[in-house]
View 1 (cartoon, rainbow, N blue to C red):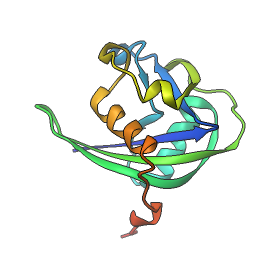
View 2: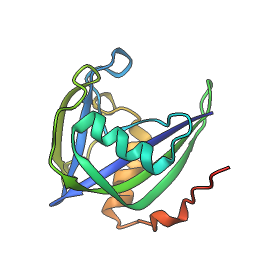
View 3: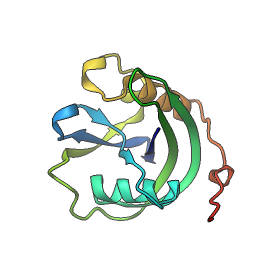
View 4: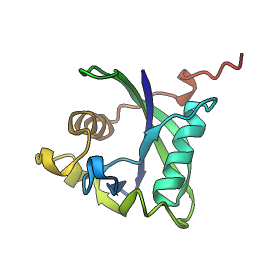
Length: 146
């Protein structure tokens, strides 16, 4: 099973989005997200992914949802966080990301074109929760070191 972390970074009713540069999802828009690395907490992974993909330093402010993505290949467990910017953007991984953009939340909440967004169903669900004010304390996720 793959574990993916994603972060909806919200600032002044704009969401931080990335345009994918990898061949698998070339040109599609997504929240900053990626696979959890071995021995990494979901919090550390989420912060790392945002830094790598956007250059921004963030703090995790809440938990939006956890998606159990069932598909024909390996299932995916996607942990979706809320975040806020704590340090300005530096360089980001331009081999994986074409561009970084702040998109108005009201524009994202009305998106319909599945061909423009990666993980369309998950993204639609996450943005819907953000618009509806659904958010849980991030402390619901506990790190246990063994």
